[in-house]
Length: 134
Image (cartoon, rainbow, N blue to C red):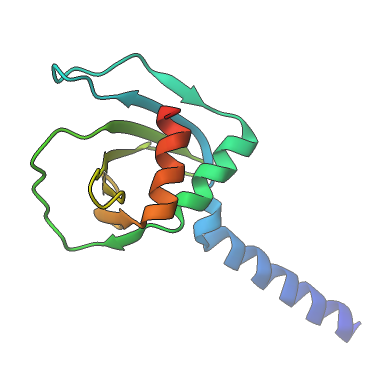
């Protein structure tokens, strides 16, 4: 009987921890728009396949976020991405710039816990290829 109580306690703790982890913010849909030279946005494209979402999520997990940064960008973003997460009421908007010289990516997030982020070259190139098919 004592063993069952112990196992129940461990199970309950595991459920609570998993419910509070970043993993519970699982992507369910991503709507992207590419910025056009005239300042407008192109047509919307939706990513909703589990494999593609999982791949995107793994890239986003590699972003190095700076919460207190207030960046000023010299040009309009390359991609506007609206991400819907499981267990969140509001979507998160990401402005994404692909830096041609360094081949990195810079992101601004509407999520107060993320703010300003960077992706290294290899992951940025993969993200660009996935979002822009280039």
